[in-house]
Length: 298
Image (cartoon, rainbow, N blue to C red; front, top):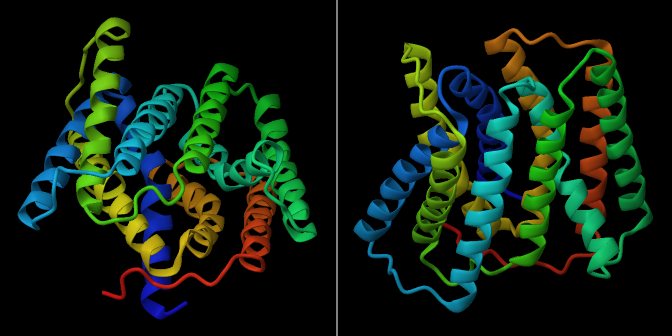
């Protein structure tokens, strides 16, 4: 793994983790599904516009269309939609910690439902990762955290893990930015329909809302997705997924710095255990994965 790949991985982990803090800021002043719909619409227009300017085609392969539709539904509408709604009641740090278990869920679902082999190191990582999550949940539940909010976060992470297993490798074949942009349109359409029937469109316009919305649209929404696919193309999905072990640290650090969310010793211990569990799971996959050639050295 070269220095450029490491830089891309660190950048992706930070951008992905910071989205929970900016989302928490947004839902304090705007209806979550409507705000997310608008975010996806703008990100999609920007992504598709840049893709067309670069000469990328609307004509996707059947596998690419499948990837676009599944990720638009599971990642954008369900995973992010559930998280945005949940963060009306759940702190950004807790939402980030739950979402960071997604690599553990991918390994667990692959083992239980897809017949994938998991080495002893991976099994130990799964046990440690979920134990760390249980430590945090136990402490937060005793403090009166919202159970519906936690349920939405867990369901969203499970949906994203399922989509990840279902469409692995389907984004190969070019037109990457076009695929990213079209995924945004799928999410915007589904969330816009849900918001129309389920939400009251009342917005309290504040400078913080505008800044958080702009950041979420451009950085975690568009740039982080593009960086992730570039990283996967450079070093392969297995190695790229190793950077997810940083998400719990970045997620709680950004929330503490910008939202002043309190962190106890139990939270810190749980985050460290989850991160080590994710790292163990990903390292166990690397030991058995075939050598992946770089799809793009640029």
